[in-house]
Amino acid sequence: MKLLSNNTCFLQVCVYCEMCNKKKHKLIKSYNYYMSISTVGKKLSTAAIAGTVIVLGIGAVAQATVLTFDDIAPISNFDPIPNGYGGFNWDNFDYANGSSPKVTREGYDNGRFSGDYVAFNARGNPALVSNSVFDFNSAYLTAAWNDGLSVTVKGLKSGATLYSKTVVVDTTQPTLVNFDYFGVDQLRFTSFGGVEPDYLIKTLGGGTQFALDNFTFNEKATSVPEPTFLPALLSIATLSAGSVLRRKQLKQS
Image (cartoon, rainbow, N blue to C red):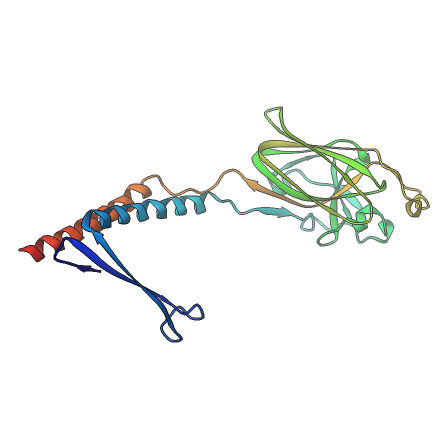
């Protein structure tokens, strides 16, 4: 950047090769800009504010957590999911070893999206997941016995229903369901209906259970930069603009 005699600044911006971002391959274009001193200060301040917004936005994004149920104690059949797993309380949710020969071709086997284990609603009854406030992003659902099984999932906060979605799933493969329930503290799963296919009738099992895998959520508590960070960046912009003005005054003297 150069200070010209007519109280303007001259800035040249070069765009280089996309292969290496250097002059090694090719100088594509060169742009010349002429700005007044006040405009330079304004642009520096605007850049500082935009940078702060970006940093704050990045800090507010929580990393999604995926519960696969493969990191609970190994079992050969099924057991209740212990409270505290993933930071949640699990009411009437069991987990099953979908790779067990006992459940071959059932929804517990076909419903495995990752690893060997899946969760399910014990005895086909309603099941609950609760915690402090969180965002429920998605999960894979599979009917354990009945094709055309309906599964209703409600998202609640402080007892009030904020969200409700009903999906229809089969026994042959897991279905990804995007819920996008924001700011809830409890999920209620209820399943009903459907018809058991012929290939499962001979297994002598049945019911309205569903398999659940890759339960994905975000905790609401996130790490956000201190509020003093914004004034700090604004100060940097002010100092930068002041430096340009001082150089102008020195030139004139």
